[in-house]
Amino acid sequence: MPKMGGLALIKALHRENPNLKAIAITGYGGTETDVTAAHRSGIQEIVHKPLEAASLAQVVRRALDNQSPG
Image 1: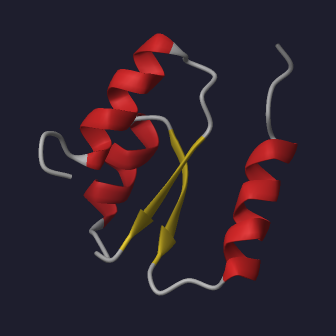
Image 2: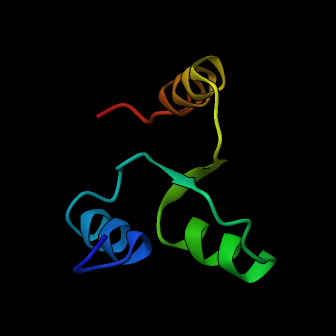
C-alpha cells in the first residue's frame, strides 16, 4: 500500500469503529512481536498467502460468529 501500511490503516479504522472485525492477509511470516502488534491494532486473525478460498471463508465465518451485537 503506497501511502500507509496495513497496521496503520487498521488502527485508523479501529479508532472510528472499535467493534470493527479485521482480517489481515499477508505474504510475510512476521515475528511474535508483529503478531502481537497486529492483534493490538484490532486484527482478529492473520491469514498467510497463498491461501485457498475455503480457508478464507472459514476465517471470515469465525470472525462473524464472534461478532458482538450492535
